[in-house]
Image (cartoon, rainbow, N blue to C red; front, side, top):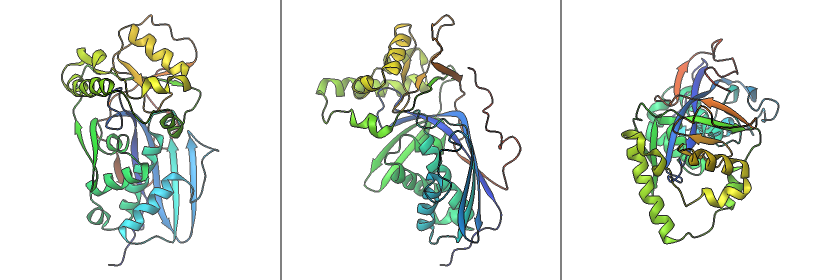
Length: 314
């Protein structure tokens, strides 16, 4: 079947995400109200990517850009590649901080490609979009909340990734503590041992189950529900500032965890007003995004082109 591309621009808004949430390693994720806005259109030839905001001047402006690579993968699934592409990225999600910037880029790329094909949603449905995004990313814990919004539980089957989104209790008020330094997921994963004690695995599985209840029904249980023994302690030596802040917040009764692979810290309950933070962290109070990625027709509007995120507290 021949592929017809739309002549108009399409745009997408994708949220930041925090994965793991303590005990939910590679399975649990939360969509946060901090967004990248992107727009794309088919061009006769070549690839041109413009980036403003986070990553400007650092990210590639050609086929090497992760958004374009995701678009190319999606176009392969959809049946054809356009002659060229023009992509505009307004980034507000910090790069390499554990807030899902790569997953946001992948989800945006897949959705932009699907929207540029006239019958794209019929060729690649939502379930297929999740499977493809997870395949590109390598695991579904960030791409699931980015696509679906809310609190997600994701898993993989022989046929690919699947996920469900659950509503979050109103009392859950996320705060992220973002350091200047960056981290790499590959480095964080390399710090993990090949095996863990059975008791640690059993404890963490129980706390992950409790976390589902705490996030959706009883936030008073968030502190015990966010205990983890699978990954955070093993990664602590590589991001000592992150580990120290998590421990200090938890000692103050705050349900704090490493966001994704770090180095950002996520607090699921509000820190005390007098909690000493120093000057090493930007502090952003973010709402939970309940809609996930959103696609529309046309170019980016004035507000979408502004790389400064609204509603952040620092």
